[in-house]
Image 1 (cartoon, rainbow, N blue to C red):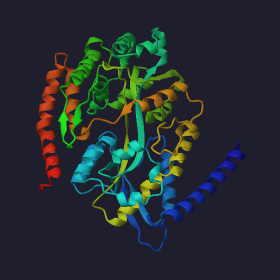
Image 2 (image 1 turned 30 degrees about the vertical axis):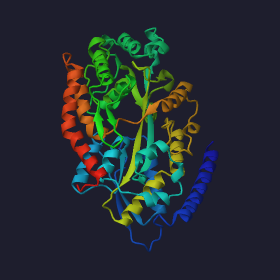
Image 3 (image 1 turned 180 degrees about the vertical axis):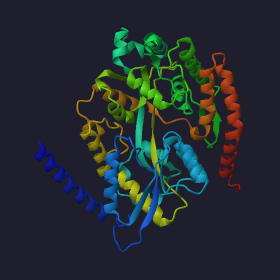
Image 4 (image 1 turned 90 degrees about the vertical axis):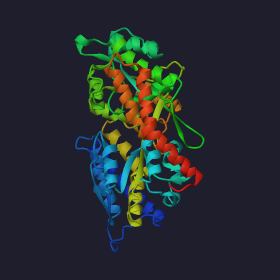
Length: 459
């Protein structure tokens, strides 16, 4: 077996260097070539892996490969904040310390583009050989008015996971339990056992509370905002759908008593509860599956399903992800270097190397690829069929997050938290207060700015 592995490694290494030479020859008009006579360009990238990150060895290896291929690009790898990366990034932007390359989340892109935070990379993108190999969904997030502002980094889709053992012990049929809101609430109540330190559903009540809450608004037949034809936005926090969704959250917490006691606990703690069997169900994303296996989860013990249908009959999921953005204030040389770095890591070779690393280390990869010419499923052996089908179904029944989320998230999250913490709180009143404040502080200035832009009036 050792000799075969050594032979395979030699073949892969040979193919790698051939692919690099080909890539260099095809893209030398755009990328900074590895010519030792050129001046070294230094760029700052917020992509340093966390110390316990499972795929850290992959990134360490790829960092070295990039250095050898592009000796004239010196990359300073910095570690971003784990849970408050957005706040850290905006502080850096305000202080004139924006990194040369940053991975922005999908819902932040619209706001960032409006604020001039990402560089317009349209010309570089048009010259990029692989520009047509990326998901149209991801490119729609990176594009505005036919101008390109980023390079798709990754994508995910959400679904609901459940502990099959717990459901079997309670004699619950998953097909019935996850049929709709009511059957799910009753099932979550049935599997909750405080004496055994177990609860039914890990609800998200952190400062990101609107992330999962918006799904329930969709399932009730609405959304949290409407984007008008002229580009302005209308708040719909107090719509029937939003109020129904928040009432359902309240019921899960106080009527069915099926959530964790500390509804404000971190997302990491929610995950730990599910991994340890304390939480029977949890919303998850397709790129968390590898983390579960690393935590010692046997995926055969985990069931996956679409989210229970809401009053509208819909069981919509969400597609999200990240976009590499460049610093618009950086020099042309730095922008080219940052583009070269980003496209190296988003090349077919690099993406497939990550999948191969995960396969070799028995880690479940993200089953949704941002590149259309890469098939993550081919790197997974003996994968439970229900996981494959659930992810495929979720992609077909998914949507992007609500319009202007990056600016409105704190207002919605606060309303969700109020209802989860106070049994006497009225969902409509709480959402009304949130909408009034968001209208005054965010939407009125935003709409005014949009109208000035469309009218051609000076800012």
